[in-house]
Amino acid sequence: MISPLQGKTILVTRAKEQGEIFSNQLENVGATVIHIPLLTFRLHKSNHHQLLNGIKDYGWIFFTSANGVIYFFEQLVRYEINASVLKGLQFAVIGKKTKQMLQSYGYEVDFHPTNYQSEAMAEEFVAHFGSAEKVLLVVGNRSPLEVKDVLKAHQVYIDYLIAYETVVNKDNQTELIKLIKQDEIDGYTFTSPSTIEAFNQQLEAVQTDLERIKQHRLCVCIGTTTAETAKVNGFNKIRIPQEFTTEKMVIEMINFFSQEREGERNERT
Image (cartoon, rainbow, N blue to C red; front, side):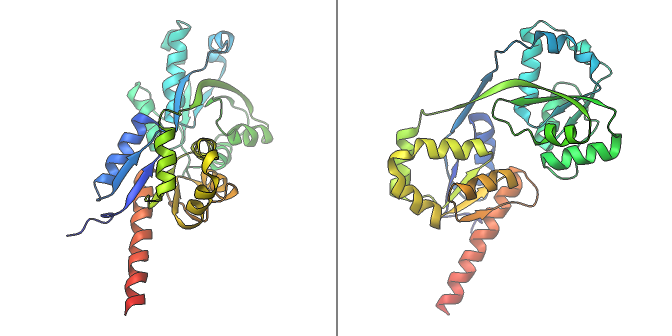
């Protein structure tokens, strides 16, 4: 039996640890995976001492990524703040991976939206809990702030803490340029607007080849915000899964290439 993505080469641009999980998911359905992490992450070193010392003043902590969870707890360690200060606080998250990461630290999720989007998270939260809550949003330095904007528009008191920094990883830039010039990758995957920006930044020297790639190669984005960034940056064949997870991204690729093969068969008959 032929595996669904047999004969297809897929580029994974996600950071190292998360990208390895995604790569395994693709390899399990027959894809040849090239993993070039375009981003890396590090602890944000601004002074958060006063904000974290007053964390019990908040009713809710919002996480929009697994990285936010990881680096939030690293910030507590950095300032030697005992995690007992979180007792009595409630937690809201977007997505299964963020929920699983929070649970790995021993905390349960009190709210998550039905739709894995920042705006939906904020709107549904207000619908459930009203506007009298006090929220701390944990983000990275390049994270979208739609949650903050929507909650603020609903008169919810909200502060945000930049727990980590997203840094462009250029370790594999030479290999990436070579791959673009050879044009042997069938599908490009992006899991954040930042990965698309890093992709473009590292390929400025081969613009002609890059434009050709964007016109005729598949681009699968994890969500609408990432897809909008891909569109603005010239990608033509953009697909988005119905559920914003890497598992559903794999299914989206399977569906796309199955339809492509079916079309090729019809043309031959």
